[in-house]
Image 1 (cartoon, rainbow, N blue to C red):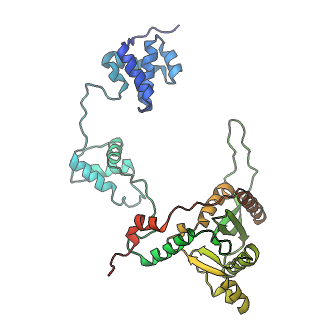
Image 2: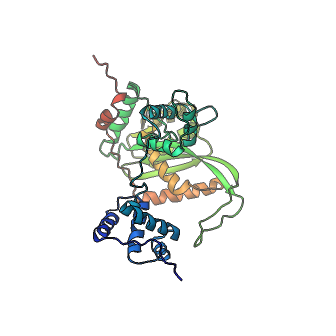
Image 3: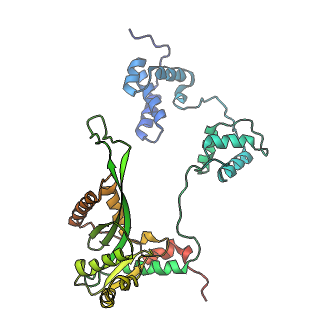
Amino acid sequence: MPRTQEYVVDLSADERAELNALLASGTHKTRVLTRARCLLHADDGLTDDEVSQAVGCHPGTVGRYRKRYTEDGLAAINRRKADRVYERKLDGREEAHLIALACSDPPEGYSRWSLHLLAEHLVGLTEIDVESISHETVRQVLKKHGLHPHRSKSWVIEPNENASFVCKMEDVLDLYHEPYDPQRPVICFDESNKDLHKHVRDPLPARPGAVARYDYTYERNGTRNLFMMSEPLTGWRHVDVTKRRRKQEFVEQMRSLVDEHYPDAVRIRVVLDNLSSHQRYAFYEFLPPAEANRLLSKLEFHFTPEHGSWLNMAEIEFSALTTECLDRRIPDAATLRAEVAAWERTRNDDNSDIDWQFTTDDARIKLRQLYPTNHD
């Protein structure tokens, strides 16, 4: 038999309206909304077991909310008691020491500060008089000041004036915003690689109630290089899989670009990075002079600046290729070629072009710290 409820919830009309408005707003924390629902159901005459089933919490939790309501009224939906006085554990000076500590290098043997580590070192500081501090207090102080000592991010563009960077950047950006000209196509070119890993045991397929599973061990099968060519304005791309990416492979890629992919083009503008194999003289190393001169006469190279590979739209294609095709174990080169070719056909059939929005005018505003200012 259901037990008799020790604490009775009897909400007034105003209290019910306040709780219903709180639930309808959708702007409060989940625990507050749960407490409000418990009180409303309890006011409807439901037992603790019935309320727990309706709300999704433990019956003992419902009993505690009943008791707090009878003692504090609607203040029961808040975590803190209405008549309790909370004292700050840290004053402004001590918070300043905690902030300085969180912004400093972690102690030897640690890669980053943790909440417990900060609490431990703060207590040990001789400049402040704190006997103990909880990691939750540390978390609240860090949150208030927007500090995240466990996080970091890389930054590759130097924030100083860099005429070389902006010169190459504006050259590429201006090229991207020229009108489409089939006789003078703009091609983005880049390289990447893929490690070949073979399953040592057959994976288990997904089934209702269980995700697909595979053994964490695998067999290494070497690495293959991927050359990406992409014409962003038309939505065309082509990927070649090779064993290596030396200068001779680069020359062969450029030859196929001129003779196979764009034989009718008058001039092919190629956007590429500053890899050591991307050299004009390499054509003369591996081809007869007349052939090297013929190819170079149809190629116009536009190099992205150092630390500016994000300007190469071929990286966008590589990101799509990795996410949609390569993010899995591929056992051998033949499978890699087949899978990449299938991805290429599908993406080309969809005419997935790239709508590049960043312009030279945008760069002069958002990256203005890179532009020299000591003009005469």
